[in-house]
Every structure is written in structure tokens, then in C-alpha cells.
Image (cartoon, rainbow, N blue to C red; front, side, top):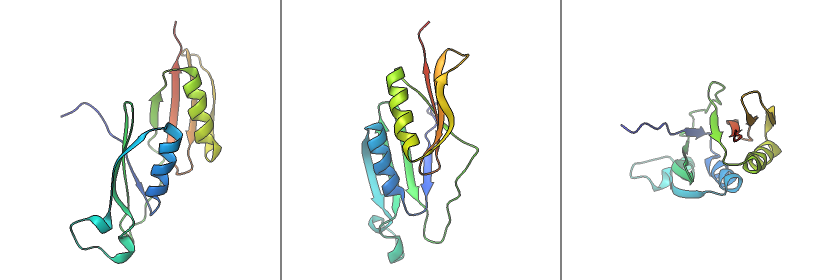
Length: 137
């Protein structure tokens, strides 16, 4: 078993839009996209363009995602967030700005008592991101 957790996002018909959004925000790479229409099993025509599985990567950040099958609603969860450790204060500020542009700021990006620059944002798709840059001592 790998000692790594991989976030898997589920959307209700807008996974392609979310994938393009994350590609732009993080300047990453789409590794794979397969739609239900491309799958080797029968699916209703309204599912053809929905994403069955997609993979996204930027450096060590790896995310998988899909759409739900038609008729299966997707509930946005509030019990999970993705914590990203930034390599610089500038990177934290850039991602914070981009994610909050169409999202909701839950905690302003700020200096913290634990020696970091930290902010929390819920993006346009309901995913919560904890952005942390630990300052050198």
C-alpha cells in the first residue's frame, strides 16, 4: 500500500469544467479523461459526455475526479478540505487570489502564530483548500 491519500472529487455533470478550472488555477497537467460514452459498458445517451474518470497533476499534487451517473446527485461535503503546503509566500498569494476569485474566503490569507502564511478558501465548485506556507526560521 502506498502511504498517500489521493483526493477524488465527484461532480454532478461539471467535472470537465472543474478540471479546466484546476488546470488554469494550478498550471498543472491533465493526465487522463475518460467519459462514460467512451466506457466499455452500456450507458444512457445523457451520460455520454459526463466524465467517468479524470486525473490531474501539478508537481506532487495529484487529484482524481468524475461526474456522478445521471440521476445520482452529488452532495458537496463540508467535512474534508485539501491542505497544500506552498513553496513560497508568492505561490500562496497567487493560489489564494485565484481560488477566492470565484470562491468564498473562509479565512483571509495571513501570518499565523505557527510561523506560516495561511488562508482557507472554498472554491467555485465547493472544494475547501487550506493554503499554508511555512516561513523559514
